[in-house]
Image (spheres, rainbow, N blue to C red):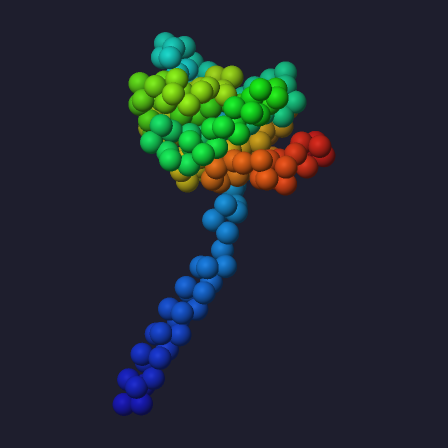
Length: 173
C-alpha cells in the first residue's frame, strides 16, 4: 500500500527530470555520422534543367557549402539574406532543394534571390536522408576533397559563420 502513495511522486520526479534535461539541450548541435565522410556521389536533377543531372561534390574549389532549403521553409527566408552576402563575397554555395516542387523552388528563388552556384532537386528527400538531414535549413561545410567537415542545423547567420565556419576554413578542416 505504501508504494501506491509514493508512486505519483516518483512519476512526477521522473517527468521533471526529463523536462529539465530537455531544456539544457541545444537543438542546433546534432551529431552527424557524415562528418568526415565524402559527400554522396549520387546524381540529382538540376533545378530548371530536369534533363540534366549534377552531383553535390564540387572540385577545383577550396571549401564549399551545401545548403539544404525549401520554399515551404520559413527559416530559409531568414538565412537567405546572409547566403546572398556570402555568395557576393565569393563563397561557393550549392543548393539542395529538399522535398519541394521545382516550380515552387524556382518561384521562391526569383522572389528571394539565388545565392547558389547550382541547385540540385531532391523531391523525395532520399539524398538528404543519406546525409542525415532532419529538415530545412541545414548547411554542410565541405573541404576541397569533398569531405563533410561540419554541419549546422537551422538558419545560417553571421555569428554562426564567424564562430563555427570560418575557424574550420582557416585551419583547413
